[in-house]
Image 1 (cartoon, rainbow, N blue to C red):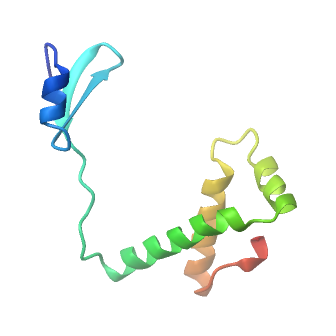
Image 2 (cartoon, rainbow, N blue to C red):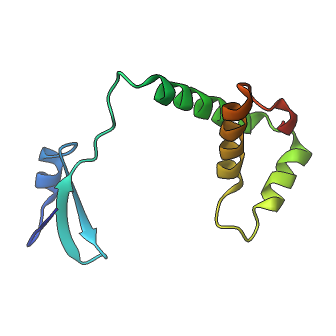
Length: 105
């Protein structure tokens, strides 16, 4: 991370995807290296976890109306959103049993 005097839009466009420019606390211009996503080959467990997370994400749109209202009601006043809780429980259930809990839908 480097503090800068200032940066222009031309600099940002020239280095897009390589350097991340932003204002720290809205005032101090800062540049840092662009975060990199891990590249394949993934380990077997990483690939399985990504597949399960994708499946859980897809299932959030298939939840019945009343059940969806219950999920949203249980997350009121809680820091974690209902989608995060849903995906976390689905992944933990998968780890224990090896299949997806269709009962929550």
